[in-house]
Image (cartoon, rainbow, N blue to C red; front, side, top):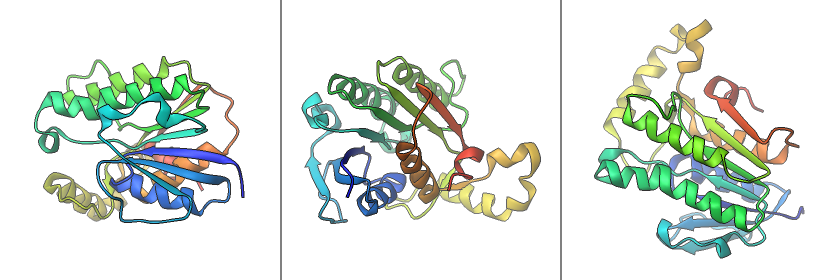
Amino acid sequence: MGNKTAIVAGASGLTGSHLVKFLCENEAYKKVIIIVRKEFSYSHPKLVTKIKNLDQVTNNDFEGVHDFFCCLGSTKKKAGSKEAFEKVDLVAPVEMGKNAQLQGVNHMLVISAMGANPKSSVHYNRVKGAMEEKVSELSLPHVSIFRPSLLIGDRQEFRLGEQFGATMMKLLKSFFIGPLKKYQAIEAKQVAFAMMQKALEPQSRTVAIYESEVIAQIK
């Protein structure tokens, strides 16, 4: 068994739940810490559960951690307001990144979104872009940013817009070729696997950004 310790924020989400299982089953990790608001349905000898709200996380939670996986993601509808959405998708990742930095975490791996741009006219993309910008400025040895297209998989909560989009993406998959290929929907399980693989690989860049078509090819 290896000696790496991972911490996962957003472990109960679509991508995070797959990631936790991958990490627990990988020999490189001796401990997998998850930050969740309620009991997690998955159990494993390596798993350590910390039940707390995002604003209760401190740098002590990152003690001894090598890799920080941030899988937080919401929508304005689910969060209830633009401000609440920003707390989950912008404030929390940045503040956790700062806490990780204080404890000497080696690698932060965070899910963003295709089209992320701090100057975008679309609020969602603008928030994701601002998050990318701020975590890239942290003094962490390595930051990996993942920009998936529409995520598909079995969510615990139903999102009508995403469900419709995923269905249409599957029906139109054969049309997404050439320059359009990057817009293909991607399995959340593949995104989770790609995040773990990049955490296990030696990193030469301080900040690396992986677009959806690249994520889909990581084996």
